[in-house]
Image (cartoon, rainbow, N blue to C red; front, side, top):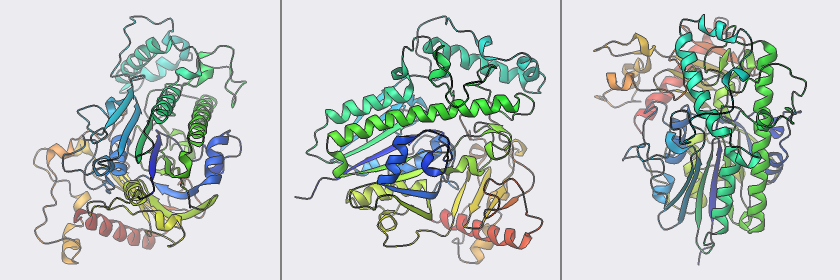
Length: 508
């Protein structure tokens, strides 16, 4: 009889990798995540390929690079997922706020024999029957904020969306009594309960999808008047925990933006607390002796100017800068080296092949990702030469050891009926001539594809800069100085690599 092997994929939504002690942050408190890194293997260059939330989950579950293929759409019938291939295993999904991903329409729960969903925060799927909240939105807005918001061309729409979100969210949160009412607590406790009642005589694949630290960034200090944000205890202004998703402009001061980030850090520390409870339960059940755990996020979280977010709040623009596309990834399994750090490039779509390889399930040819087990075991030094990230139909980015290059695609708002936006496929003729693409391959996109929703971010706009960008990763880690004009030869080479890679992916 083969030994039982389990796999657990744990996703924390909108988790910026720089908000972790094990990734070099000296002031944040993440003892359980850091211990996990000491017990496992930490990847220093992990990147999401296709953003944001839903496209990322598709890539993780199907093992397919998806940036060229599909954006924010339900799981397709032809998509083959980890759950589809774990037939005969105990296959379970746990998720908080599932309408975005795990509703019947979205389809990402397909193949899981058992699911447990916690319907908590959702400004579009509100389920609390209370008509009123004892909280008032005005408590969370500083003087002059609404005037500044209304002065914007889209200010009325942003205010309407913000008020609607606050209203529905506050009705639910007035009933929170303790930290255990937070989304991450509800979700992790449900996962522990399921694991305690599982039949451990059979292999288990478990997918735990956590909403936190996703916005609204409302950690315990927001709801408990006796508590202060541990990372900014002397702050006196309005609590900026649910800002409208937009370009910052003059909406907030640097002090407010800093406090927003400190509330986010508090939420990450809360996630660490409950992750620690999950690991304690796994140790008690003896599951760490035969289980691979893949700990990651779908993307980061812009929250300010410069390295903090290039002037954005949340994923409100399809801009694949470092703070958004660089994700934490730590893998732990028996037999793997403890405390190892790997600089090689890995991506989100390596998840499915790695999980299947660990569980001795054949990896189907549809998966373009790579099993990371050889890399984790030290049998190979790398599985790819670079990472590619972006937003479907809007932006591409290639990240190498020394450089990062961003190519902006034609804007959605400029497309008209009958037009074929050439930027994304202007390499087609060259690629065909070079043998990268087969002759006769249809490279045109339909208007339906062009108008596809690119994000669920309320207030998000499909706006991209006019010119491509090049950054020196050796001296400019957070992409603050565009050096394309000074290094056009490097940019040209990276563009050739990028479009050749995208052309190759179209054939697979």
